[in-house]
Each structure stands twice: as C-alpha cells, then as structure tokens.
Image (cartoon, rainbow, N blue to C red; front, side, top):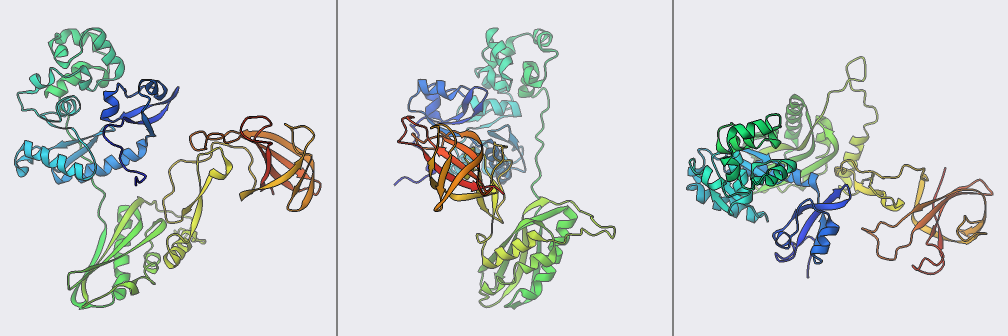
Length: 489
C-alpha cells in the first residue's frame, strides 16, 4: 500500500510549480521530466502539452530555504566553513580538510553516501574556486574533481550558463555565438570590457570568468551556528530526585538567555543515570520566555515520571527553539507591567493536560469561509503570513456545519422572502447581496456548486448569513439548496 509522501518512481516525470505572472510555472523538475523536455521557468500548461503524464506539486520555497539552512550546519562534519549557495546548493571550503577523509575522491563518495541516507541526491564537484565548483556541479559529471591548473580545460566545454549570469546576458551571449565558457575565454578581454563595462556582477561575463579562474577573490563567508544555551549540574554523589536542583538550573539558563537577548520556546531536561541510561523531559511554551519561575513551574507534574534507577549524577537543562526577545519597560519603575500573563496560563494548562488540550484559531488563505480558519495547538508555531484573501464583513459566529433551511422566494436567482429555520418561520425584512464564492478547483471535487451568500434580517431584527448552493439548471445537480451559515451580532 502506498503512503502519502512516498517518493515517486524515478521514471515518472515530476515537477514543482510556483505562481507566475500568467499562471503556474515550473520551479524545479526531476531527471525524468528534464529528459522529456521540461524546462524550469516554463508555464505548467505548456509543459503538460509536451508531457501529458507530468505530475505537478506546488513548491515551498520558504521551507526549502529553511531546510537548506539546516543542511549548511549539518555539512560542517566535513569542514568548518559552509554557506548556502543560492536556492539549491551548498558551498564548502574544504581547504586542508580533504586529507582527513582520504583525499578528494574519497571525500566526495562520503558526502554522496551521507546525503543519500537523508534521501537527497546530489551533484558534487571539487574545484579551486567557488565559480568553477558551481559550474562543474551543475553542468559537469556527477562527481567532478578539478585541479588547480585544470580549470581552463574543465570549464571550457560547459555551457555559458555555468558562469552564473542572468537570463538576458546568457541570451545575448548565445545570440553572439558564445554558447560555451571556452568561447567566452577566447574573446579578447578588451572587447568584453567595452561591451559590459557598466554591467553588474550577474550581467558581466568577464567578472564571473575571473571569479571562476581565481583571478578575482570570492571568499566563503560562513554563517555562525545558533549558540547552544545549556545549564548543567554535576553531582558528587548519585541522587534520586532532581527537583532541588531545578531552580538553580532555570536561573542559570534564563541568565544566559537574557545575556544573549533570547527567549526559548522549548526546554529539554536530561537526567544521566549511573547505569548509563538517560531520561528526558521536554516542555514547551506558547511564546518565547526567559522567566525562571514560569519555566520551573512547567516541570512540576513531570519530574515524577523519571525512573531514577540507581540514581543519577548529571542533570542538564538546554534551551531549544530560541527567538530574539526585546526588553520591555511599560512602567515608570522599570518593570514590564504584564498583568494578564495569558501565555503563561496557556503554558501551564498545556503542561498539565497535554500539548493538544489547548488550541487557538489561526487564519488560512481561502475564500471558502469554513476553510479560512483552523485550530492549531497553542504551543505550535503559527504558519507565517497567512490569512484570508477576503476583507468583507463576516458573522461573529460561524456554524461548524451549515444548517439547511426551506426557502420561499419570488425570483429564482434572488434573495429568499421567507424561510423555516429551527422550526421557526422567518420573514426577510431586509437583505444585502449576493456575494458569490466559487469553488476552489485545486481542492474541491469536480461538480462542486458555487455559493451565493446573502445577509438577511428577519422580522425580529435577527441578522443571519444565508447562502444558496448552486443555480437552477447549472448542470451540477437538482434544485439549489439553502443553508444558514452564521449569525451577526
């Protein structure tokens, strides 16, 4: 049985799409898709005409960048200087580190093996410069090794795209007949200088060529790993209860967080037993915190779950998921003046009843009202920058399930004149609408009917939100159905 999330077979053409100016465009493609003539940047509708069996999934560029940033730190097992290269690559400065792995060839094999264990395929290259490695990894053999004096011969046959130029410059060079890097090398430098003297780095083939050949420096500016904030207590003799040591550990950890200007949303307590076993307790917060008393309270009902065995002699408390926290002063005395402490209440309830017991609503990007909101665990991090695309007035109370009503109306396409809801007859005194909401074709099944929403006020002054599902003779079912979806204040 196939599971959702399984990788498709290698012979199935699969692409990732993103929104373009004229519809979805290809963001990335696997080898089978590229062999069928699929090009990155082309419209999905055009590529489907070339390859009817094409499978399309939507890309997540923000998630890809976050995963690549984590991979940058993970790759430091081979060398200390690593950095993300664009949206799909890593640059490692392996100077002086390749001999630790038995040479450059053995190091590439080790990299390919470790990446494959993560489910990643990679094209690897070792070269004297950043630009040469970039070109060989994308347009050279699967594992390429270029010596200090071999850049001219190894880069020559590669396409001019390997110089990391923008699309208009590549198109211009191809129109001039310069289709390979070797052809650009053979052009006199004075001619290239005259033509591209005012061009920027990504539009100047001469500067890019100098970087690839090592004539222009391009150092690797490695990013720093997030600081590890941890407090620990080494005990002279084994004990069976870590509770007396937790206040000092929390105070020490929060002092480190305050010095770094951070707050934590995860706490990891590890107790090392004398028999070699380790017990873990994890707690979470709904907002970044560095309040020692509050963090200590989250462990109150959890420490009893630790099996001490023959005792433990080492306790560590580590901060996870740290975020910047600015110091606030809301009172003249210099305090923060937080009287509500809502986040601390959420943390205590979640710690006592479980992380899924307390939820909070989050907005989603959807035109359909019941999909514009979802319930998320209060301790989970909300998705970034998502919200409904509609700005029209919505009822304060939206029913979980729309309630069907019987309607009388004068005009088939018009508002209801009278309807029966919850065994009560309601006569429409005023109305506004309709507001038409079409089905979301990327989620709804074929044949889903559109909705026309009306704001109505009955004879008692009660304001309701009704919608008609479907139209007469729309070919998607019988007569339209009416539902009450919510109540206004």
